Length: 236
Image (cartoon, rainbow, N blue to C red):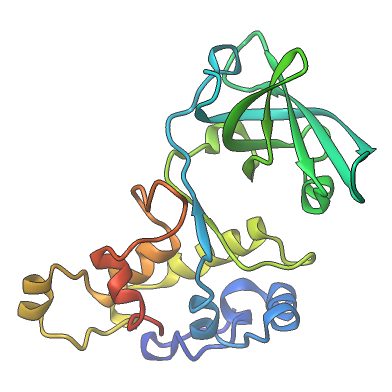
């Protein structure tokens, strides 16, 4: 990859950081051409993960997070309206007994494309009862390479497309953030004013927006925290 000076990082072509093929896909999907433009592709919401729970210990009617491997999938038409229900059966990756659980997605086009057998993912949703078994209905999920990747931090959900899904955007954003330093995002508010208002600096606000280290809200949407208040002025 071409060498970049620190002052030119935000103006650099995306290909210099994410590679030519990925840069072409980002340009086609969103029109981005530079590193700075891509950094302004903020998550539209976050999945609150919480503590990981074995399937064998799932509490009814509570919000849980599990790490599981897809065993099989099926699809059936809805009876009362147009559309389909995509069903996924998973086995627990945290429990040696491999307890299984069923999940349902209504008109789950994205889930149908992504949740193929043997896929490992972190699922988060509310436990409900259907017929004679517990299930998760419409759970949020993040695909993992392996169970060890499971992270209790909130998962950013980006505006995505069929050829540029959320997981790939997160991976590419991680490449960019790994190259970024505070020198690339200069601060324009005096330090004493930042401290008096309880604001973080622009660089930290940008990192927190893409990789939050703590709960964002109880609903999965961002709040007016000091970090969020800076986001309107932390865009590169």
